[in-house]
Length: 138
Image (cartoon, rainbow, N blue to C red; front, side, top):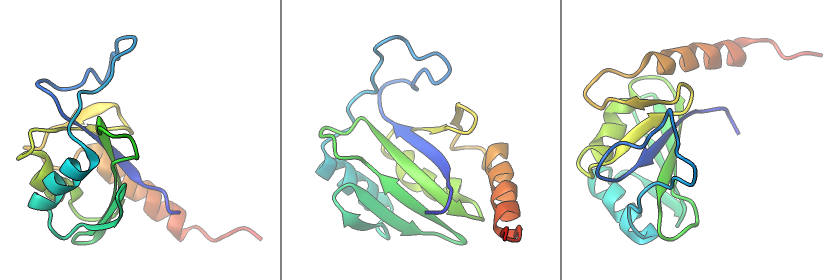
């Protein structure tokens, strides 16, 4: 599987403590698997649910693999992003109306849905392009 830029999505009344997880901290429940799939698909209807735990989405120059896991209830979602373009705009389509938060695991920072894609996305794209364009060893 190709490497990805990974974003986690959490719910709750306030953002998760991404830089300082208290001992035993768990994200708030965001719904059952079925509820979470419905909440994502309501705003991103192009998602194809390959099975109850994984959805695939093809955006403008990029793709998402949306992993809600097999735990029920769901406490967090992991989105594996591959490609180019502006994936945050399409993440925003279902994250903002659901009142969820996005965390960029390459930096450990929250992603502000009102800002352009974070610099870490551009760095990941450059790294990914470099790896893809390197000749394979013999």
